[in-house]
Image (cartoon, rainbow, N blue to C red; front, side, top):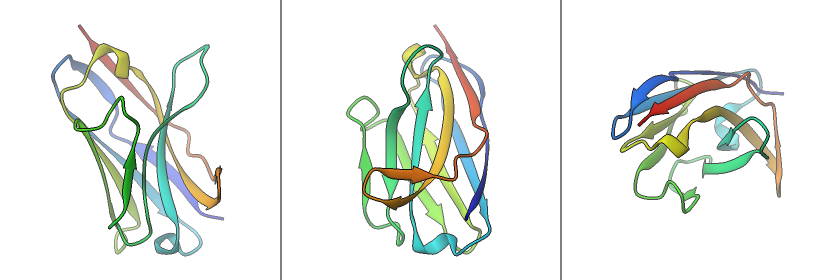
Length: 118
């Protein structure tokens, strides 16, 4: 399986930006659709964005559409999440994962905390 390590989280004021990275190692990273998700304590994990193997097809949750951008560099084995115009409701632990099948995301990383202050 692919192993994932997220980084890039931090504390930012509302309206600010952060770029998250997800570094992959192990099996062929470039063959898989990758996803970003987030979780707030006490709530279910929430879908944020996905990107297909080539990077040409992306999908976003309505709550982040127009503010977040997912991208990937297969040569570097890394997926990115550029987050602009951040809002306090974006505060969460952000995770990346590999899509192995329909609604089948696995190989979760340890997550990176994003905190947006108002």
